[in-house]
Image (cartoon, rainbow, N blue to C red; front, top):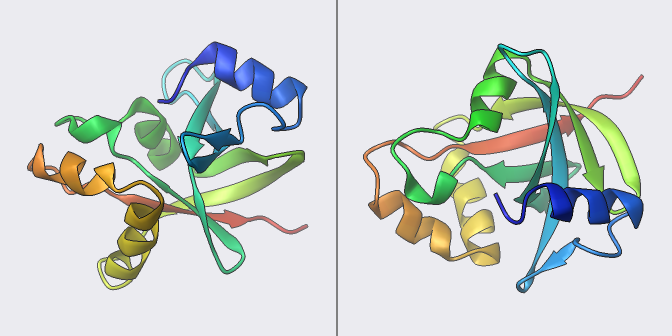
Amino acid sequence: MLYGKEHVARYQATDGAEGHEWQGTTTLILTTTGRRSGERHHTPLIYQRHGDDFLVVASKGGADNPPLWYLNLQADPEVGVQVLGDRFTARARTATPEEKPELWQIMTAAWPAYDEYQTKTSREIPVVVLERVTS
């Protein structure tokens, strides 16, 4: 997680004018539904585009356990996404083993520390693909 509730509140209030650019990269706000609580959780995450999709990484800094937001989207893959002022519903899925190498390279170009995070854990750090849901 980047900053937490303050980052999320500023991002949402300013349509990303404050918070989208972060330490040389870009962030979005991912909203998941708690798998136990049913409450909505907002998480700022580094992202990159891949065609029409958005990519995020469930790294948790290389911790052995995945981030809670990742566990939540596994239980309920329908998520909310905010990129700047664009708010939309997306379906989240873990990149397949076949597509992960290309997507990992895109994400490490944006945030090289992901490679370091992977060396800290035996867990395979997933790349998550956020596919916009069209009505």
